[in-house]
Length: 317
Image 1 (tube, one colour):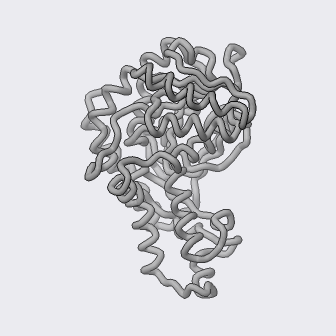
Image 2 (image 1 turned 120 degrees about the vertical axis):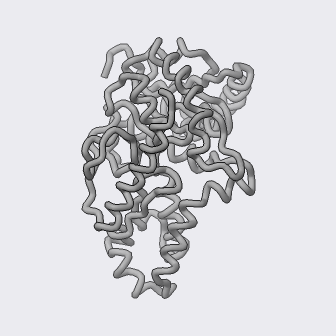
């Protein structure tokens, strides 16, 4: 770690719904002792910081304030949530052109002051913007991370938990690939209390079958669209997912999380960012795990990569 970095300092760029809720989740969970909010609307950032500071007596000591890009110079972790929001009827990929221009300015401003921290991209479409950030920043690949399918994997476990009548903590499964329409549920490795889902279903009192599992996959993939249609935006669960990633980085946990990162010959895929189970610690990405996927899952993962590459190549970078 660079000796000039504060190992407990986090910068959050973007003080909208996701950024402010992320700062709240970090504060409540005691992740980081210094959090700076940066937003093009300085009044919004200051208002959010004030609101958060007023709860300081209820949480671990933390200094939360609004700042500008010069304030992130010593931040260990820089979380990017700024960008155009997804509107009802829009896909995550519809946001590409809107957010590409925004990110060019953001990444340039970050690297002017900090070239040693870890970048965590949350803005959608997160996989393409993670790869774009890697290209623009010239940071090593291990220090450019996307929130990826960490939230999707949590949704997956949550829905299976409800369907099977067991605690989510006893459900183990991953969503890989794109955080979006081409994401891939890894059913072949999904298990409950160590029992493969294919063996658990016959002994489950719910007596569900393949159609029920396919419906769960569909619900995971379309969850954000449904929430946006009903309330206009998603931010609580994604903020918790981001806080989980931040905790693994700042506390050097070596947690396995399905973050998005640069593919370097994983399943023959290169030069795009996608999600796979990944060991995360204070260095950022320690190792990406190449899972023993079924042939169907590997094919779907490669198709997800091709889908994202096709969209990235349309950008003027």
